[in-house]
Length: 325
View 1 (tube, one colour):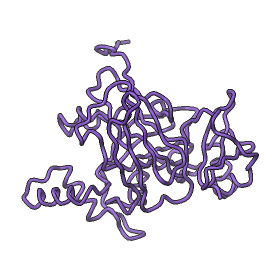
View 2 (spheres, rainbow, N blue to C red):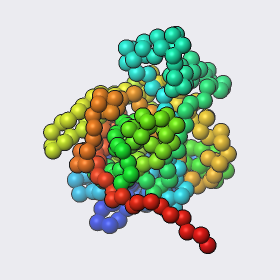
View 3 (tube, helix red, strand yellow):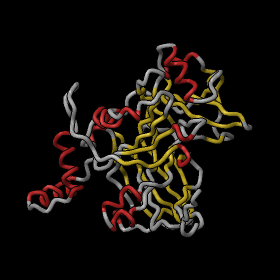
View 4 (cartoon, rainbow, N blue to C red):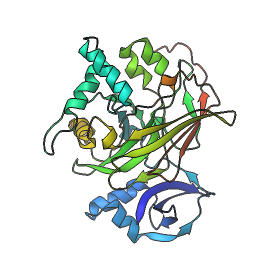
């Protein structure tokens, strides 16, 4: 049974392979990209899994392949990356502290948003729940895959990981959003900037985003168990498990999807959407200061392949001056 799809390049040629639950890989015939497979599945009123099963070829080994992000677009302007925050339950101790602060009348806007989600983020089927925090990260030009350096800009004050699950979506010809599947991701952010003032959150998110190679098909397990690690000079600097899936979230995925795609501009035919669902686990919260050369490694039990990216910094460009025509 096909568990996930992977886009790759071999000898300069793109392709897509399917992975089963045991991690065995087989190439798909006549399939240059996941988006092309999605177009065919929509036209045939089929599913990605069913169409991929009809195209299974010979077994493959993975060691000579270059992995791409699990979805991309020929025109990066038609791929939108966004996310939601304050969606995951923290530890019992953390939640208790939040509730005590709220009861004492000292809740921040962040805590009030979290508590709103905890109370109304999982509505009954057919009903609308409370809307989550939402942010924009960028278009397809910021998307990178595994084993690719992840860059913080020269003006950045921090470059830290956020281990998350992302929903992958494709808008059909009639404006219907289709969920293609899920990917493991690093919703890379500038937490030092965010800490200065919460209103800098929007700035802190305008960074690259990394996705692991696999597009997990079907439904996301309710209880996702992952691991986030930072390596420095080949040794583990920091490591911590993280949780995702609806059992560990204050919002249902359906509620997050509704509040994203209720906006008409996000239902433009042919567009790809990558939406990060949030996390409760950050090395920054443990006072870790990342530096160039550190390697972020994120894995989860529902994915065969991990996500790995080395932190680099791009040169500063100085003051940006706008020309007048």
